Image (cartoon, rainbow, N blue to C red):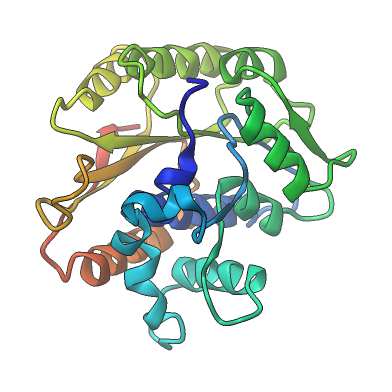
Length: 282
């Protein structure tokens, strides 16, 4: 959706869950030395300014990174949370969190020498900022390319190991089914890939369309990780979010569980409802 700009929402509670769990998945895949191809299909601008007029309009970051930042040095923080705090700190020299990393920044920071990344976005302003934030190279492609076309055209990767991250805006209601169909099509060509799908929890509950399509796709082994914040952030229509992970690396499952527990405890003061279960078992 070319009207959507994530700067208005950057750093909120959904970004917390999204980026920490994505980091846990990538870290779990890195347990093997073989190189990985990582596709960030809806990259947006990669790094966000939380002091921008867009970010300050609704101050959604107060529901996420703003609430958690004072906990950054806690020794009991789980590995995925420590990784996330460390990345934010690396972008800010003044002990603040105003330069906030998105998914592309997370994958770029974690990538090893032999890994390859492609980050796609069609929005002109978002893509221009993405190119300013990162320098393209042989192993790091910045593509002004439709996400669904990229999924079709870039899989299977030559590395034979891959992580595909999908977090569309869902401003168009058909995107829930479109994402499920795109993953089903990609899975037919690249069944061993790891597909990470983010979704929002909104009053219309259209995420259930995504669930239904995936359940009927024939794909097995889909993990559901979800946090419902209830009415803790009444100024936001989105009351929670979740991640569906096709072929989750088993090395990452304990780390993801620890991260979810921590986020629920610290972000919602233990009042949120969390899910860590199989949408579709093996």
